[in-house]
Length: 236
Image (cartoon, rainbow, N blue to C red; front, side, top):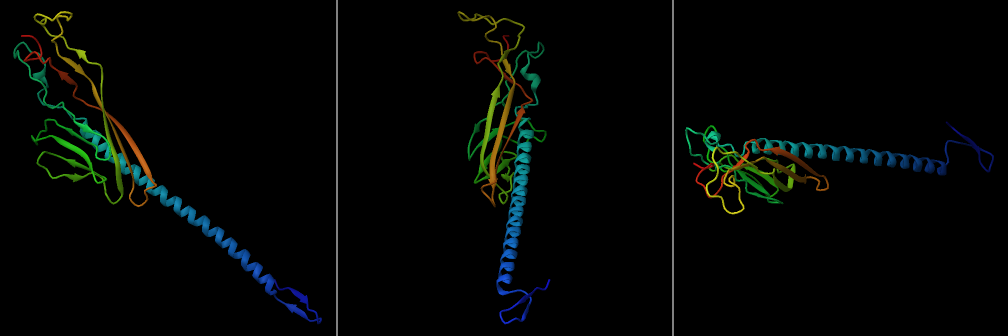
């Protein structure tokens, strides 16, 4: 809108004065700066949200793969050999029960089970320079489970939980029990085991974006332990 103002000599002035123009420009710059700051914050929050989502998905996918595989730990393929049978008589212990674990920035777990293709174990998951690696057999080349360009793994934790051991019943009593021990002292015991897997990490492009995921898995093969004093599970 054009404005008219009368100058000192009585002439009419058309348009804006220099002061009005400078004030208008200052207000416009202030509005543009505020809009730019708001847009920048929105773009930053959107980028951070995408990083958090990607990081959470990568951690969850890795935890799912690890727990799905660890569920098989301890499978021997000859479970019947650990149970007393009057026809067979002797029993053998499961040699796949051991689960050596470490925790931290170089956390790892070794496990074993009988595979259909007879691939030799033990198999393993571990952290190497911020990347979770997996070994599918004793002779296989280690492979990356996580993408080192996206996720840096700060820690890998395995916590083994074991239920109260339950004594299995044998058809015969233990011979010559020690003083204070019952005639079932030499019978084998069984326990249910589970693993709690925790993975923590941060985004490679932004170390402030950190996430952690925890997954719990029950091992399908229960732990059966023989008495060390006997060569078999139950008294002959």
